[in-house]
Image (cartoon, rainbow, N blue to C red; front, side, top):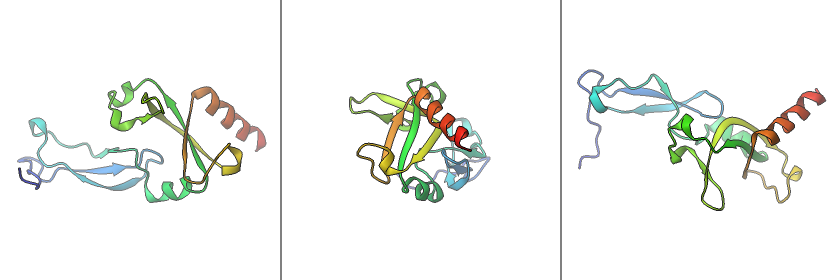
Length: 132
């Protein structure tokens, strides 16, 4: 099997701008080549939950608390876009998150991830609004 890209007859290397899931900014270029039905690649798309360098820098300041849902339909139930808990159950991110000071969480270490539900995130964000 060749490791090269099979070019699209219509679209050549068929590029797409890889977008950071967390901030929506471009983080790279994805080259798709020939796709099923020789379709054109989307102009912009999220290819993974891996953060861009700017978001990673922010996440390393504290504990990255991520709101998740058990409904994976937004991602076509693709588990590549899910976080799994200690029991192996998938949870999909909603896109809402906060970076908390490590001392605000029990056993919090900078750069770690923690998952939470919508109600918890709502309470956290409400507290931020009240302080402003």
